[in-house]
Amino acid sequence: MLPWKRVLRPLAALLLTAAVAAVPAATAHATDAAPTSGWNDWSCKPSAAHPRPVVLVHGTLGNSVDNWLALAPYLKDRGYCVYSLDYGQLPGVPVFYGLGPIDQSAQQLSDFVDKVLGATGAAKADLVGHSQGGMMPRYYLKFLGGAAKVNSLVGIAPDNHGATLSGLTNLLPYFPGAEDLIKDTTPGLADQVPGSAFLTKLNADGDTVPGVHYTVIATKYDEVATPWQSQYLNGSDVHNVLLQDLCPLDLSEHVAIATFDRIAFHEVANALDPAHATSTTCASAFS
Image (cartoon, rainbow, N blue to C red; front, side, top):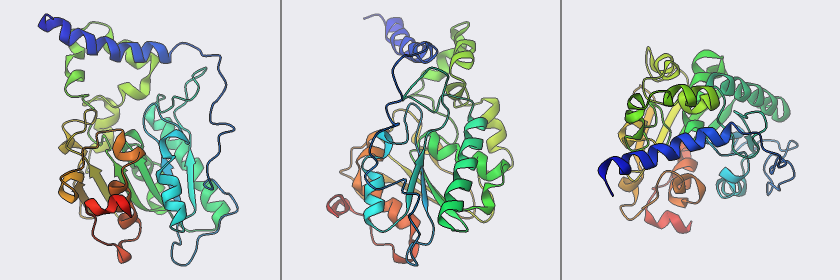
């Protein structure tokens, strides 16, 4: 295959994603009736051991159920009140969310956290997000008053400084109209391109805000939020951790780290309850 074809093929896949997202779909919302195995229980009351509810924030093209089929029960089984939301929906596009303007998605998160706090009676919540879901809440914390309502933010493979898709987005300027197409059809994707107006505003004047504990869990095999070091945050109350420093044998990439990696889950549990944290190792996969 000619070198230029190797470049065009993945770029075409990116543009196809945007184009498909813009086409109205007739199928029903698949998560409306989907079971959540005990989470999103609006009668749940936080315990003294775990006084804060946990809100799970899915990633781009994810939803409130599919993203959390493993982590939500994992946390529920450990005594947490666990909730998840859908955000960033585009008209006529079911199931695949996180595609709308991210500042609007952050407002949806704000409204959802208010609902969770109202139902549970808790003063603050903890947020755990994957990919965009680990980055978007920072807008809520910084610009929408979320810092007063959130104790900690745990980002699993968050694209805090953009998602280059292994360098693919660096090619967009060479394809006239590509950036405009993505902005028009899937603004949530455009907001995640490094250097976007959204990311510039988000990261100006520092990555973090006072009063919130931040944890970033990254994998060196990430192929979306690249380079993986760009996921890390700078701040006085930040814990950045590389999954392979905890378990060198862990091969999880961008999706697997949040969907079924119990080593990452153990580190999430540590971040939510640091007073009772235990060492995260390869053996955590069996705990």
